[in-house]
Length: 250
Image (cartoon, rainbow, N blue to C red):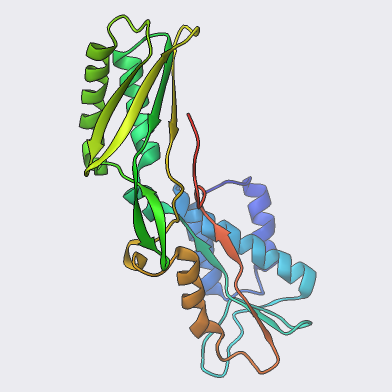
């Protein structure tokens, strides 16, 4: 994924070339060229490697006593580091708020071309994530959202009448109500805002106990546990998509 110019990326690749095993460099270059977000971790790792090579004469993939190869050794400071990229993709699958709002916005523009403001306040419930009880938004399955938002728009058109007065509409997802309200406005087009509970991101297989950050730490432990006595161990994390906690409007 070319989020930087080819010239810039080529300069970074030239910097790490000769310091990085051919197989790893080839894998990173192939990842960067992919036309999707999976290339972002590759770009992140290339820049991190290049920066540490230039600043600290870093060694790439040093072999430890147990045969493991962490990503970076900073020999001047005796720091071993394993690079990870983490993502909230699974949270966006489990709580597809953005998809719901985008789909609902399309339905409003298609079926409710009125002057006013729509507001969606998603209901929430408690869930155990990363060993803690937190509030998470309750939404329908992603596969059902297109049909559900279409029906909501049709219901709002019937309830709103001439849309000259404020009103509220309730819909229940999995036993939890979500409120949609309308307020007349002075714009010549509808606007849409939303609110939801803050939520902590996680991956499906970590749902009961671990966040993606903790999973990255756990995954790096075997890579770093045989670092020499007296050395420091590090884990640079790059957040790939979205935010851990999200509340906003569109």
